Length: 373
Image 1 (tube, rainbow, N blue to C red):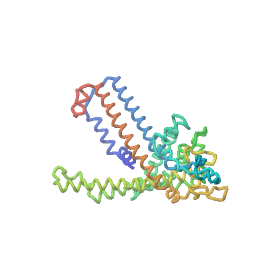
Image 2 (image 1 turned 60 degrees about the vertical axis):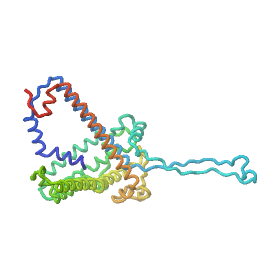
Image 3 (image 1 turned 90 degrees about the horizontal axis):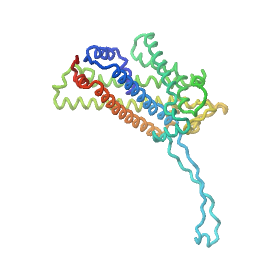
Image 4 (image 1 turned 45 degrees about the vertical axis):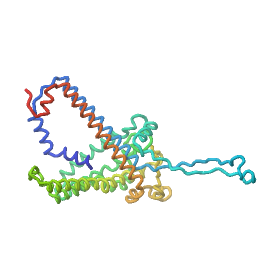
């Protein structure tokens, strides 16, 4: 949800105008050509690197965590009576082998373990498997979303309807990306993985819900922001606030943070998990998954050859995702957030040091907002 808010903010016209004014009115700095090339190259490399790391953790690893079914191992051990024991002395029957059912630790319980598992089965590029299909889906979604936004008349809740329609239209493409992420390596191109039209009937509704929920969450957050009067905050002078007014302002922001967190956990996350698990349920039988996956969803799915539907229902897709798996998924997102944030801070300092080394004293003056002739 935070990614969605940031993206929408950057796409807003006022944000673009602000960036344009900052570029025109900002301090004029003369940088040698080689310095410009080095800075642009560094920014490009850092951006690509952070995007790939973010994709690897928050899309590949998280998606595998959504579909993994922890497996159990059966161990057989023989038990022999100790020499000189009472049972031997009395000539009792020998004890037979002991069978033990051991629940193995899920592969996706750790990020490093998941990535090692991927690399061992699918090679070094498995960390970003499906990335081209992922960005193709996002470009197609933005294209259809913009067209529908201009075609449909303005009405309350229009962004929700537009997002749902765009998501439903691209449901099969998103399923092809999911198949690429969760299945074993194959020579098939992703477009050959796309489900047929009968599969679209199963995927359309979960896809529409998953793409609409972030907008619904934004409406909820915006509504509480208006209720708390935060939309009028720029009209007041906060420097004149008393201690009680500052306490109330901080309380409102804390409550807003809790609301954003609750919307992400209880609205956006279930919708996203449901979409992924419904897509995984129609994965062709000839494609093996790269992590353990119960295709029957604990007996809730019956194959078509046995007279069943061959796919999980919308509600059962989330209900079959137990609390242990939900906690494991949330931990993946929390770890990914701190990893990406830490890398961003470190690389930002590297970029700042590089800019200082190229521009010298002009860099410090630029930070202070002075014009450099």
